[in-house]
Length: 71
Image (cartoon, rainbow, N blue to C red):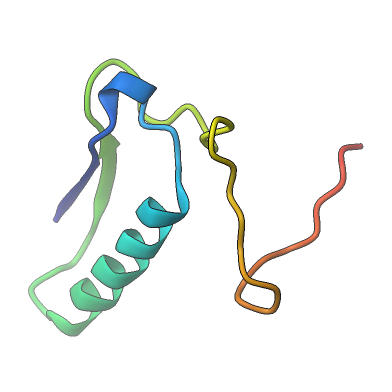
């Protein structure tokens, strides 16, 4: 299975919506015994620029969020 992040205009910057969609898709892939591997790729020139800092990655407390500190 090939999963493509499709935000080439933003260099596939990661958003909460992408995270939610990927979780749903991986859960679906897990139900299908024909899926042996998943290749995650990005549309355009860049695989993924990281978190979309223009909108941030806000999470609901206790819903999978983690505290991170810059070293």
